[in-house]
Amino acid sequence: MAASVRANALLCWAFSNSRSIPVIRLAHCTRWLDAFVAGRLLIAGYVVLLTGLFWVNDTSSYTKLYYALLAAPTLIVMLAKPQYWRMLIREPIVMAFLVMAAWLLLSLSWTQTEDDPSSLAKRPLYVFMMFAACAIIALKDQQRLLKALRIAAMLASAAAMAGLAIFLSRNDGGRMIGTGALSNPLLSSHVYGFFCAYWMAVWLTDRDGPSWLPIMFAAPLIAALLATGSRTPLMALGMVSIWMAALGGRRALYLVAAMAFIVISGFLLRPDVLLQRGLSFRPELWGEAIRQASEHPWVGHGYGAEFTFTIAGLGRTLSDPHNVELAVLLELGIVGLTLWLVMYAIALVRCLNKQACLQLASALAVYGLAAGLTEGSNFLSRPNENWFLIWIPLSFIAALSISLRQKGPLLNALTEEQFNHLLQGADVIEADGHGVKVAKLADGTYLKLFRRKRFFSTALWAPPSRRFASNAQHLRLLGVPAPAVSKLIQIKTSKVDGVLYLPLPGDTLRNRWRALTDAERELEIEAFGAFLGHLHQLGIYFRSLHLGNVIKLPDGSFGLIDVSDMSISNEPLKPWKRRRNLTHMLRYGEDSNWLAVQHVSSLTEGYAEHCGQRAALKLNQQLNRLVHATQ
Image (cartoon, rainbow, N blue to C red):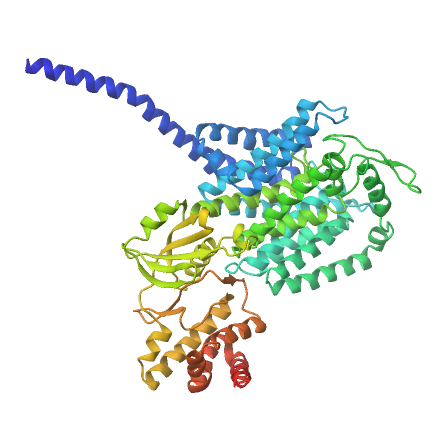
C-alpha cells in the first residue's frame, strides 16, 4: 500500500513538472531574446540608422537596413514581452503621435494621390517602431542609448572629414554633397547639422567630460555645413543656441556669438553661395501654399496628396512648400497641424526638466523644428534625411522620458477611503485650512501633500509631488543630502497628490540654533555660508531656501527638505537668482537677525570658500541693502 502511494506521488510530480518545463524554457528563451535584441541588436541598428547614409550606396539599402536591424527585431521583442506596449503607449509623446497617425490614416479616405494607399498606411508603423526601439534600449540601459548616439556622432564627424577631403580634391566650385547615399547638398546639411547640434549640446550639458572634445568633433561638421552652402542649418543652430541659453546655460551665449562669427565668415568666404540666392522665393512659395491650404482648411487635402506651386519669376513649378508645418497643414489641415504642434509641445515641455540628457535631446528637437521652417515637406516618410529633423529627435526624447519615469518612484492612485486609512495613527506635523500638509505615518515615513487650488494649474502636467521626487534624486546625484522618496500618491477626487519619503536625520537649523550660544552659532553659520555657496555654484536655485528647510545631519553636513520648488541648472547661479535667494531667507525675522546682523561676517567668510572673495563681497553688500530696506 505504501509503495502504491509513493508511486502515485512520483507520477503526479513527474506529470506536473513535465508541464512546467516548457513554460520555464519559454520564459528563458524570452529573457534571452530580450537581452540579445535590446542589449545588442537594437543598439547596432540604432548606430546604423544614424550613420548609414554616410556609407551605404543608396537610400533603398538604407531603408532595408532599418527594417532588418531595428523595425523587425523591435516588433519581435514587443510580441515576446507585451509589457513594452504598455510602457510605450503611456508616454504622452507617443500618445500624441498615435492620435496624429490615426487622423493621418483617416485622411487617406479623401486624399488624391497616385501612391498606393496601403504603402502610405505603413509609414506610421515605421515611425512607431522607431519610438519603440529607442524606448526598449533606454529601458534596458539609458546610458547605452546615449553612448550609441555619441559613437554615431563621432563617426559622423569622421564622415564629414572624408566628405570634405573628396570635395576639396575635386575643386569644381560646386557645393559639397558628402559620401554614401547622400545625394543633395540640402539634404546632406540636415544630417551634418543634426550631429553639429548634438556636439553643441554636449558642450553645454556635459559637466564631466573635457570641454575641448565636443569642439574637436564639431569642427569638421561645421566646415561641412559651410561647404554644402545651405543656410537653413546655420539658422537652426542659432535657434538651438538661443534655446539652450533660455534653459539657463550661460555657455550658450558663447555659442550665439560663435554662430554669428561662423555666419559672417561664411558670407566673407563664400558670398556667392550664401547671398546670391536671396530668399529663394520662400515668401511667394509659402503664400501660394497657404492659399491652397485654405481650400480645405480643417481636414486638408489628405495624406500623400500632390501639389504644384507656380511662382512668378521662378520659371518652373515646385511641388514642395519648403516648410514642414505648411506641408502638414496642406495634407492634414488645421486638425492635423494642431495635433502635430501638440506633439512637439509635449516633447519640449518634458525637456524643461533639468536632466542633462533631456536638455541635450531638446537641442536636437529644436534644431529639427527650426530647420523644418524653411526646408522639408515629407514629414512622414520611410527612413531618410528628414528623419534627422523630426522622428529621431522625438523618439530620443520619448525614450528618455519613458526610462526616467520607470526609474522614478511609482505613482499610486488612492481612493478617499484608502487615503484616510493611510493617515490612521499618523502624527500631523503641519496643517492649514485645507487639511493635513505634512504627517508622520505609523511606520516612520513622512507624507507631504500638495493640493491643487486652481482649476488650471501647472500641477495638471507637472505635479509638485513628482517635482519633489525628481529634485530629491537630482540633489543626491550632486552629493547634496535630500529625502529618499519611496512612493507617489494621488487622490483625484480631492485634487490632492503626495509624496512618501524617509526623512533626513537631524534637526532644522532654525530649531538647532535657538539652543546654541553665540560662539557656537557663529561657527555653524560659517559652515552654512560655505554650504550656501556650494549650492549656488552647483546651479541649485532653491526658492524655498530658509533655515527651516535646511537640516544639520549627525555627521555635521547639511541637507535640504521640502524641495519641490527648485530648479537646477548646469552652471553657477546668476547674481539675480542669488539675490532672490537671500531675499527669501531674510523674510523671517529670526533668520534675518542671525544671518544679516549678528553673524554676517561669518556667513560671508564661509560663502567665499566656494564662490570667492568677490562674490562674498557682493553677498555682504546685498545683505546690508536688504536689512536696511526692511528697517
